Length: 383
Image (cartoon, rainbow, N blue to C red):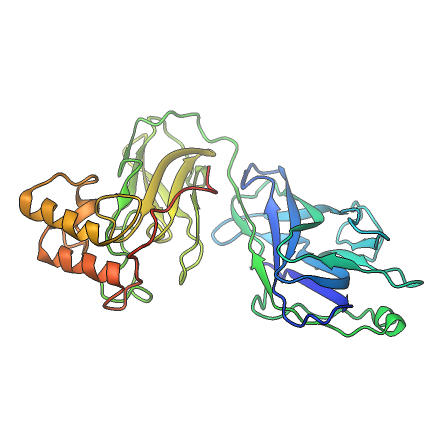
């Protein structure tokens, strides 16, 4: 886990005491090769309009790989945007490497981008309600031995941003020190070896496009029981590429949302056996309520959707799915995705238990999340 990433606001002119701050540092690419550069563009969003004297962002200068990955991302440059307001702020950076631009002192832990008022006269900026403001750019380079996932993980993510120690600013213009809660949108980058053998997909099982309507866990406890489904060791993904020598990191996973309880998902292993065929196992099954995209060497090879209770794979999960399930199990109607559409309780058969499981999923009974009325997940973020 990397050192803390933090955002600080200092100085306030308005009487607003309730505002939530969201900091997003989006990478220019989520998939790079060892030695490549990746740029994180950081923006800040306030839920309420506030006037502040400055904004400060701290990101770790070095981001190690998430185990079992290797290598690191190393900051090489910090660029702070020219202010959108008039008069402008005095900008500075504190850097961990001597080739960073700007002024400041060497800091071995953080690379800091700050926008602060000049000391000679008060200056301010407005964080408008629900208007994104671009703050700074951080450029990292992956090491030559980098492989795996690199995520900037803040410490104390539920704590408010810390006040700064710029007491001269506070004393000079008589400002209080605000402490707004903030949300961190975690950026992550996957580094894969550049020597993934060129391949064209021959076959993949389960087939791409499946809508998995089954319950997300084997027991009647949606939040605590082990997840069950596509991508688990019991239901691995079989990928036939027709070529040998593809390393595990050549396979990557993108999901449109993390699991509420278990967080981000990823490819755990890819074992070649027999030649040219790879058994891909994820850290856990695909996330319920999300679209999951499996890629090889940066190109998507399969898309899976998990929408518990949606047996007819329609635009919504609702009571019509129970009626449809009954027609499949009793009248022998075709299911759109075979057992993924009717074996709700994962017992390997279509029976009354699946109907009861579907009712529980739709109504949120037996400690399952309530899926009734939810829309079929769509892919808005993974490519």
